[in-house]
Image 1 (tube, protein in one colour):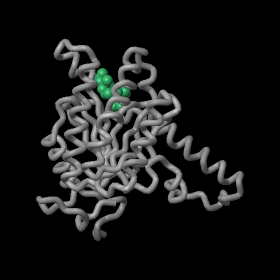
Image 2: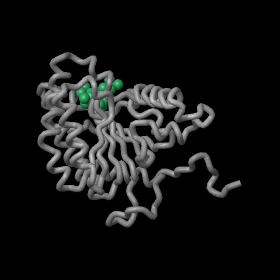
Image 3: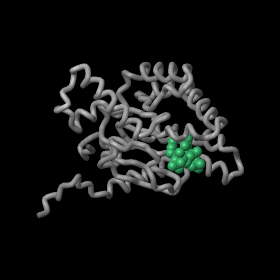
Length: 248
Ligand code: IPE
Ligand code: IPE
Ligand code: MG
C-alpha cells in the first residue's frame, strides 16, 4: 500500500507505488486524422516511451500497461498481425533503453498465442533486465483478468494435488502469491484513457482497493502532464480502506 514516507519525488509527495493503465483510444485517434488504425498504434508506442520515462523519473515503483487484451485477439487478422509485429519491434528496440534506465521488465498474459520469436525475445528481455533496481514495467499482453484468476486457481490446484498446499490454508494472501502480479506492490491507481468507463477484463483481483481515474484523452495524446494530472487527482482522494480514520 502507498505510504507518503516512501520514495518522495522533487515535489516532496510520494507518487503512487503502482500505477496501471488501460491504454485506449489509438483507433479513434487515427480515425479522427483519416489515418489507418496502425498509425494510432504506432503513435501509442511513442506515448508508452514517454510515460515509462516519466513514471521512472517520478519514482513510481511499478507501472503496469495493458497492451493487448485476450479479447483483442478477436480483431481482424490484419490488426492482430500488426499488433504482434509492433510488440516484436518494441522488444527488439527498447530492451537496451530499458537497461540503460535501470528498468525491470515483466510480461504477463497468455504468451502461448504469440510466435516463438516473440516468446523467446520476451523471455530474453525479462532475464537481461532482471537485475535492474528501478521501475518495474509490467506489460500485459494477451492478458485477461479472468484468465489470471483461472490460471491462479489452476496453479494452486496443482500444488494441492502434489500435497504442497493444504486446502485449509488457501486464503487471500496465498492466492496473491500465485497471481501474475505476485510480489509487486498493490495497484494504487488505475487509469483508463479515451473516455470509456469499463475495465474490459483488465486486472480484476488486483484492483480491489485501487483508485480509478478515467480521462477523455486518447492514448496517443496522453503525455507527462496528463499523468501528473492523474497523480494530483489521486493525491486528493481519501483512501480509507474500510476504516473510519479515527472517527466514531
Ligand atoms: C487501444 O486502442 C489499443 C489496443 C486495444 C490494442 P484501440 O485500438 O482499442 O483504439 P479505439 O478504442 O478503437 O479507439
Ligand atoms: C482494452 O481496450 C484493451 C487495451 C487497451 C489493451 P479495448 O478497446 O479492447 O476495450 P473495449 O473493446 O472498448 O472494451
Ligand atoms: Mg479501444
